[in-house]
Amino acid sequence: MNIGIIGAGNIGATLAAKLSACGHSVRLANSRGPETIAEVARKAGATAVTREEAVKGADAVILSTPFTAHQGLAELLKIVPASVPVIDTSNYYPFRDDAIPALAQGKPESVWASEQAGRPLIKAWNAVLAATLADKGMPVGVTERIAIPVAGDDETAKRIAMALVSDTGFDAVDAGSLAESWRQQPGTPAYCTELSAAALKKALLAADKERAPVNREALLKEFMSASEPLTHEHIVARNRAVTT
Ligand SMILES: NC(=O)c1ccc[n+]([C@@H]2O[C@H](COP(=O)([O-])OP(=O)(O)OC[C@H]3O[C@@H](n4cnc5c(N)ncnc54)[C@H](OP(=O)(O)O)[C@@H]3O)[C@@H](O)[C@H]2O)c1
Image (cartoon, rainbow, N blue to C red; front, side, top):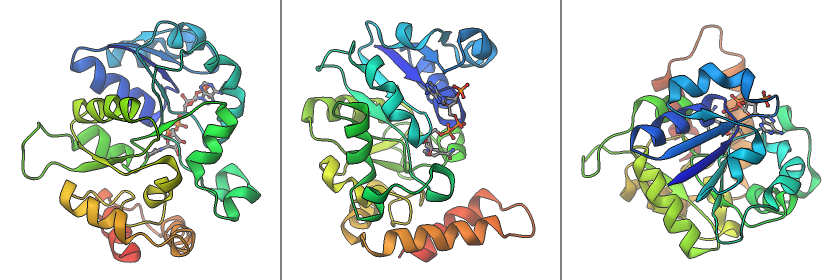
C-alpha cells in the first residue's frame, strides 16, 4: 500500500520503519519540511516529503503528531478521499496539550480530534509505548504477541487499520466505535499495558471512564517525580497495577 505518515517522531518514524520493512511504500512528513527529516526517513526506508505529497494518492494516512495539531491538518486532509482511512495515534495529556474543556467534560479524545480534523478518524497505536512498538513486535501466531486496540466508525477503514497494526507486529483488537474509544485512553487498563488479545478485550470492557483521568494523572505524577530513570518494564508494571 501507499502510506502517508504525518509526524516523524517516536511513533511516526517507528511506524514508517515497520511498515516499510513489510513492503509498504511509505512517505513521511513533518511540519518543517522534508529536508529536516531526510535522515530519519532514509533510516526508516521511507521517503521524506511535504505533507501534501504524503497524503496525495495515499491508500492510508497516519497522523502521528501532537494532539493539538489536528485543527491545523483539516485543510490538508480535504484532499484525502473519504474512502481512504485516516488513522490517528495521538493521546491527550492536559499538562502538555493544555486544558480542553470538552475533554474534561468526558468527550472521547478521538471524537474531539476527529471534529478538529474535519473527518472521521480511526484510533490505533495510541495505546502502545514507543519502545513497545519499536522492540516488541512479533510474527502472527506467536502466543506472546501483544495486542493493540483499534477504534473507529467505518468498518472498512477499521479493517485496513487492523491489518496495518498486524503488519507492525501486533494483534489488532476491534475496540468498537470512536465514541467508545475512551476505553483505550491514558489511565485505562488497555493503555500501554502490553496485553494479549484475550486480556485486552477484557481490559477494554473493564475500563472505568471516571477513573481513567485520575489514573492518568497519578501515573504521570509518579513517573515525573521518580528519582532515577524508570525502566520500560517498571512503567508497564505500574500502568497495569494502577489501572486494574
Ligand atoms: N511516544 C510514545 O510513547 C507514544 C505512544 C503512543 C502514542 N503517542 C502519541 O502519538 C503522537 C506522536 O507521538 P511522538 O512521541 O511520536 O511525538 P514526537 O516524537 O514529538 O513527534 C511528533 C512529530 O509530529 C511532527 N509535527 C508536529 N506538528 C506537526 C504538524 N502540524 N504537521 C506535521 N507534523 C507535525 C513533529 O515534527 P515537526 O515539529 O518538525 O513538525 C514530529 O515529527 C502524540 O500524539 C503522542 O501522544 C506517543
